[in-house]
Image (cartoon, rainbow, N blue to C red; front, side, top):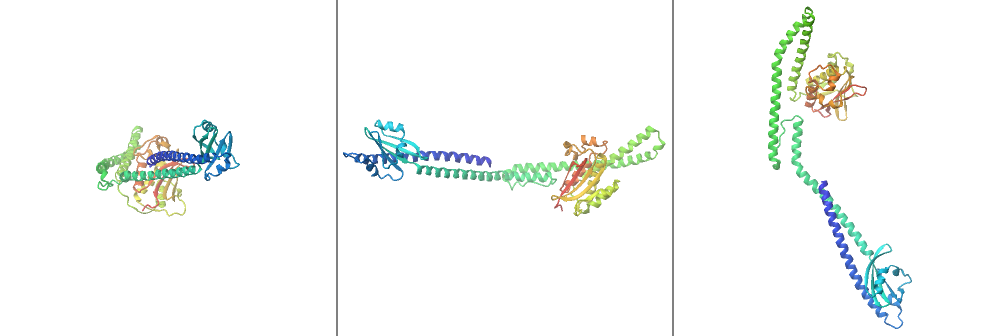
Length: 441
């Protein structure tokens, strides 16, 4: 639009300036020719009046029908004569023009008088007599001002029309790309069924076909990865259960073992437990692309249950304001969201100190605060990636966990159409905030 507007403005301004200059020159030339003709006619009348023995020069000048736009003056034998006592017309005659006329040559010169332009025409009548006539150009100047205003308005209107044409052309060009962007956004939001209709935008038929083929391949690859993760996790559960049972038997007899063997048994038991948690999280991730099964859930009571199960006081759960804490969500998934956030606070932040539920600015939110060292600004997005083990995580804890807890939180919240982020707690520590749109069904 800016390009169209600038181009239209440049073109219209150039045409306006050229038109103004050509019109100005043409009108001035025509006005000068007219002034010369009229002055010669008046000079003939004056010369006839001066042909007597004792001419009355003032009366001769008054006999001229000059109107209000012409002022005749006569210089004879070094003396100026005018129709009135006001000799203002004599002062505007430039010396160069007077010198030329006194040499017997007629001339024309443009001057400024009373703040306006004027045309002075000199016609020699005799060796010592020169007739001058001052023609006012004020009316012509007014015409030029009106012409300049009209051309300026036309240039402005042309620029606006150019901007409108640019806007229309831009819409026509970008409309097909808008449908591509909309489909890409739907795919980004997890809807892998989004496709482009080649018949809707024939100009982009090839792009639509390539786009749809790309999405098909992406969907197939994601499905293969999901099945692979699910199959591997499922196949690992049986041997893991056997290992866990064997480790449990060894752990019960740890008191009968020597110190090194007891330490080894403790390590095996802990790692098997961590491995089981990892496999469970992988299975959960493999199912995370399924649509949530929404139902009314009292989120405040669910949060209290989670806190009690983790050995935390239930009174750290608070509902901000007088809002209803019943949300339409998948109970199993949101229970895991709360569990993972509380466990993350306990593992890396010294324990959860507050869980708040409320509504604000068109969103529903859940906040979990801890009193740890917080999360570095450069890690606040990557912390929700799978298996992320950044500087912040290592600095805040002892390296325990699978690296999937916060990734699961992000997946479950995204499945509900929401988002999760981490900020600094005002009094120190980290604040994890889950947001769902107010109009979430």
